[in-house]
Length: 116
Image (tube, rainbow, N blue to C red):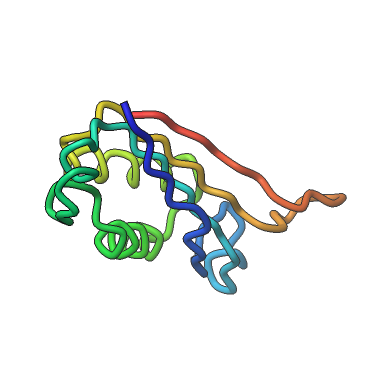
């Protein structure tokens, strides 16, 4: 079993429960870990035998562009789309981080992690 980790997919998106969050938007980071047997790609040097970073980035950007109240909802959508597309994976882990969530007090970031 191998892991392919794509870290730091940065997005500006309009998620949140407060109305101003959906208007103003905020910064987010998405990290994805793919668990799969990638030995064919490792031996063949063939992109079609692995996970295409460009495609992953586009899929994340598409899902992040759909406003949601909860990062849990966005993370679940991303995980399900990745699972549908990259069937070679036995498991996919998605972490979505919201920077500076608006709370009374200070929290630098909130992260939701889902495994599918």
